[in-house]
Image: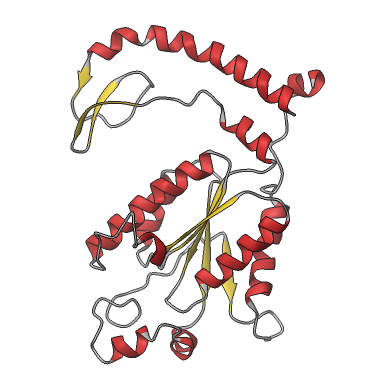
Length: 261
């Protein structure tokens, strides 16, 4: 496996050097307002100027081969108290037991650092999701199974994250738990405080939650037989989805590489 990876890196380096040399003349030109394009060119991106995108020298499929899995973002969304963090954490432990490389990005935890300057207005929620979307994209492109746990109440914000990723990299996992059950759980006492008017802009009370209309995975409180599901049951359903669609194994090698491995 390592020999195959080494050959891929060598081949990629050879392919990459030629375009870099050809693009050197373009580095002297700056096109205002352009935010994407071929590697090597210089652009204005948002408020930043003279920005150049650098391609990585180690291809994604090589990283995925080393890890023995495919990079993906599992985007857990749902009301507060729906079990997003609990199920994501349970799934991460199950994946670790199977030797899979993961990262878990939790809404509360991220607000301790990267997003500590954001509140809960619609604008701040949009920026919160945009930032974590970009971070999770980087992890997925490095071959890591990335679990994100965010209420992410607005459909357009979730879809904007999806649009930034390659096909199959974004799996929306909707925790379809009714608000009545979430309020019964109320693990942080947030619903009680929101009902009393002590918390503003609380999703499901005085701020809307827009349900996904095309989630890849939908998790309900009860199974088909009407039995209440545990976090382990829910995580097992998601694990099965990942396994059946090949996320828990490395991408198949090309015919040439397979023949020479």
